[in-house]
Length: 151
Image (tube, rainbow, N blue to C red; front, side, top):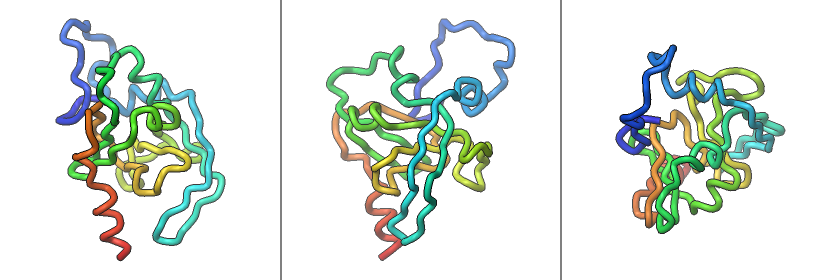
C-alpha cells in the first residue's frame, strides 16, 4: 500500500501489466483468506456471523521484514489511527475487501477495511490508507474518537 503512513513501492520493481490498478485491486487478486466473527459495536448494534474475505496482514508483511523493535502496528484511515500490539495484529488482522461475498466501496468502509475478531469495534478500521510498524502506541487516535462519538 502506498500512502503517507503506508509502504512505499520498491523502486527496483519493474512495471507489470495492470500497473494502473490500485492497492484494493491487488488485494482482491490475493484475497484467499476469510475471517468469520460476530461484529459487535460499542454503540449497541451487532452483525452475527459476518464473513470477511481478504488477505491476512501477516501474509503481506512477512516479505517486508519490519524492524524487530517495532512492537506496534498502526492502521490508518486519514487522521483515524488504530495502534495495536504487533503480535496481536499479525496473528488475527485481515485486510478485508469483501463482506459476506460483497466487495465494499467507500460508502461501506472500503475499498479496504482492517478487521480483527476479538478487537474493540473501533480497532476495525474502515477505508485503510496506510499501515506502519512503530515502536510505541503514541499515534493511536481511535479510542478517543470512537468513545467521544458514543459518549
